[in-house]
Length: 56
Image (cartoon, rainbow, N blue to C red; front, top):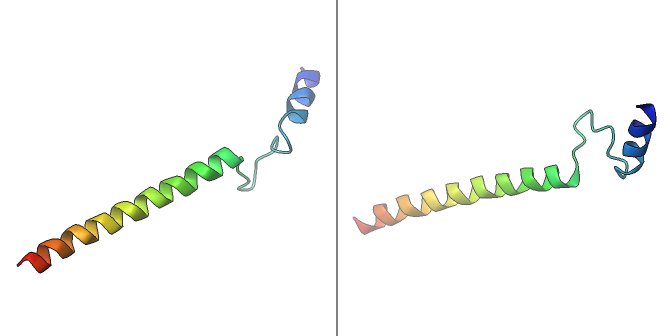
């Protein structure tokens, strides 16, 4: 069992111990993309409201 754990940690490219807020590159990219989607949705809502305001 210990041997499997050691092999797994060797194949993880230094990401075996992700404690203390360390994320894998995939997790970090996912978080960044989610933040970008949220920002773009907010911008779209602002533009919708501005369109309604200026249409009046």
